[in-house]
Length: 111
Length: 113
Image (cartoon, rainbow over all chains, first blue to last red; front, side, top):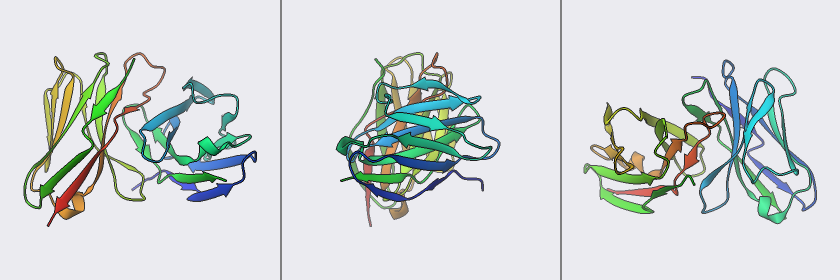
């Protein structure tokens, strides 16, 4: 069964460092998303991406965040200068439109 | 604004039915979803319902939608210990550029053997 894969599963980084979280969406999907879940809180929408551009982003997705689809398969989330409050589980998702399939998540710990 | 609320915890005995409830605020939502999250795992799509439906059944799962009260429920028949997980209700607000999901707080279902 096709699935969304994310790497790494766990990333520890120092405050102020840049991190790149990687995702391989399901191959025939056209819409791509990043969500995050701070420990004990709701899953929050960050950004959606379609046709090689951002289609919607939340207030959380500020200038420190960027997304890219560098080739035909990968979809990345970059955080330029990480803060302690960026520590969370980050989920990538992809969809054909109606329902989204999620990856296993990357746990980001900023120390 | 858009908001989705759920009760935080539900405990049932194995073999009983579980009912997880959810309320949402955006009356224009086109699709409503239920996701399951097992410990340390990602979000698994369980089922969804289109806003013009009242009920959807899929094996042990029954979804009920009351649009007037903006209330969604998930019933799991013959609950098993493997059903222990966090269940998230999510809505897809109409009019967004894409089908972004607004998630509820999640309900932790604990199934006692």
